[in-house]
Length: 87
Image (cartoon, rainbow, N blue to C red):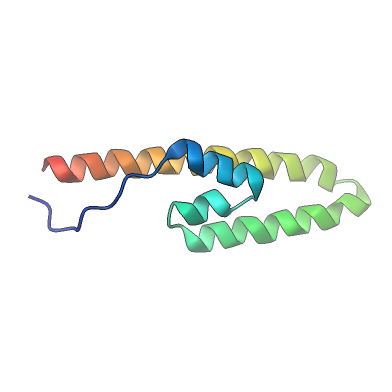
């Protein structure tokens, strides 16, 4: 029996959509506050880098990575939560 309080399951699709709307927001939804803020700062830097054109490469890469990371982390959290309740 688990001694941890039950954590609500995270909606992986919602986490990905939130990250699509604003990079880092999906990580914050997943409870990874520091990581979400770091993603937001990096994306701000990427937006500034668009003035020297490298941002046109780094911005979409970070945006896609943020969406995939939010989705995968939500799935992993749900998987761990499911195994914790089975013990």
